[in-house]
Image (tube, rainbow, N blue to C red; front, side):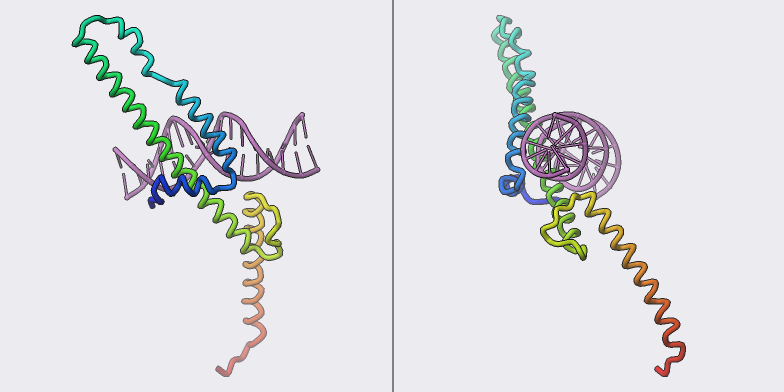
Length: 145
DNA sequence: TAGGCCATCTGGTCCT
DNA sequence: AGGACCAGATGGCCTA
């Protein structure tokens, strides 16, 4: 199941409530990325004097940079997809929470709490169902229909 | 201030 | 190959 484009994901991301934390994280990532720079390895290579050799090395450097950029943009796309996926998960939790009776809409409920309450609510419903089955069996022993 | 919760990033694994 | 899913790490926010 593929979700929307990276652009629309980014839009959603911009609109998400945890934006400040998110941008901080993005900055951290950007910092990491700029620190990790394999391209600098080629500094000594510049000392070589052969023109042809220099050209080849320059090409290699450019291709390494392109590869690095490609990897980074792939990572960014994967991050966006992951954010979208987690947003879907959070929405599902919210929906589950609203379907729980006796829980006011403005109640602060963690995901774990939501899961636990939902689980106990299901048990409760199952029990009701069982009692109802017993009642209908014994309340009307004879049916004219 | 410690601890809980959350969002995000990331690398690994599985699946199509 | 690329996307989905997962779990671990990290940092921010909030509350007792």
